[in-house]
Image (tube, rainbow, N blue to C red; front, side, top):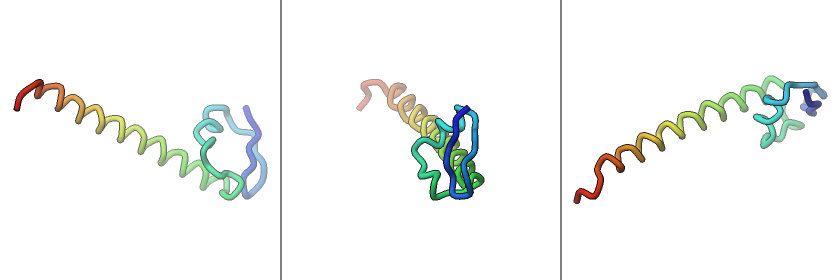
Length: 66
């Protein structure tokens, strides 16, 4: 558990949530805003990795074809 400062006050939150919020300016966001932004980033990162994997798989399956 870690203490993190939000616009609406300090809170003790689980380590994994604090890690997700580590790149956010939490002191300028309410707790709810920070949770929402962290969740969107997590979803976006997941979608981007899936897309990158699909593109790489496509190019691998093409092999050396011209």
